Length: 197
Image (cartoon, rainbow, N blue to C red; front, side):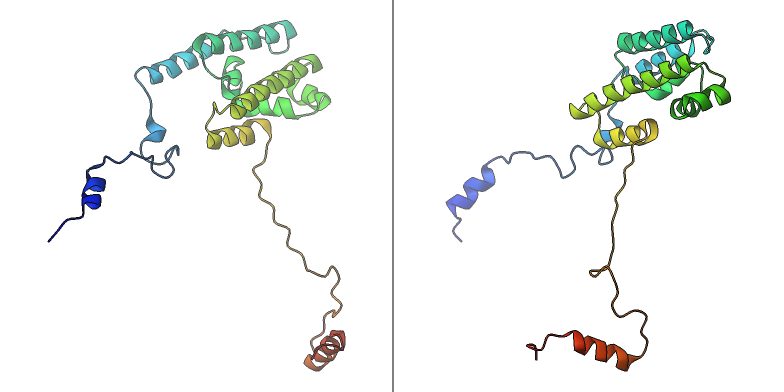
């Protein structure tokens, strides 16, 4: 049996290794588990540095602004993205409590949280700054899209909504609620143009 020289030549040619479908997916293979040596230590040290910050009076605008600035400096020194949960930790608050302060109107936040309006405004402005940072990183591909969507939904009030509008082709049902088959037939027949068979 003779062998085809073309087939033999193609079989001997090394194939270019291609990424599998979904090669960048964090849930396929070990893509989501790609921590390097020292990564876990870095994250733990960062969290411990924020947790070790002394408690401040959140009603004192000077202390509040200084702590927020300190939070961003810790993020910068550790080369970590600023996160809402990190800000909450630096302020010795729960992330949900911080969200309540951010989302309530200034007068309601003053009443419920007993915070001066100026302090509420500082927290709201900090959220805007962090949202800007998140948007810039998303646009530059510095955050996994799935994680970025989750961050936007959980921390900045975005919604991942798929909306479907289902409506009738005719906005008004000309037949109404007819149940008599003969009456329906009569109405349909009268709606057909005379040129049709």
